[in-house]
Image (cartoon, rainbow, N blue to C red; front, side, top):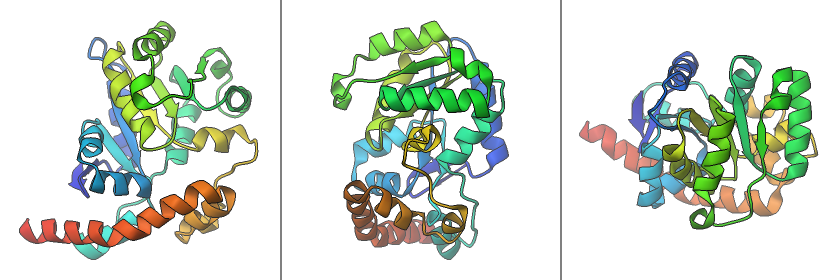
Length: 248
């Protein structure tokens, strides 16, 4: 694990899954968070110290950004592989060995997600917890009530889809109230796997680092603002990391 861009990354897919599996087996230590660090999270970590502390409080983060590895190659001389939220969701749901809970999104999305996953990944998913969350600010969620429902379901993995930065803040407040388990916010992955219209970019666009263009056309109002923030702050993020590399 390495702290880069103020984020504690685990770049090895194998080690990430192993550490999640180990934490799932630990009783009585509360929940832990694993974050999926994309470009939006990079920006918010850079400009918001409170949010940075939330991200650094995780067990670790995986690298969802396809551009961050390119920056790291220029700055530090190594290029880790991207491990996206869609990929870790596929790997864990497809492992067929975890009890899971799915929090967030609309009931329509949750119902479609349950149907698809029970067919494609694990038929036991049909019996797991799918919980729609109310529209609320981070401070207004009933964390104790939500935690009680999650604890009753006793999941190993708790997936959250509220969109960054809210979902990471939500996860960090929920995790201490859980008896056990790993909370992983995954943004738009519920929508991707529900199959109701919003889909992930084709793999050739992902490989060419062009997924952001696909997302802009899929959700222009939301993604134009995010991409604008990323373009605005990326030079400062790279410069700050260069300075830390020189000091090291």
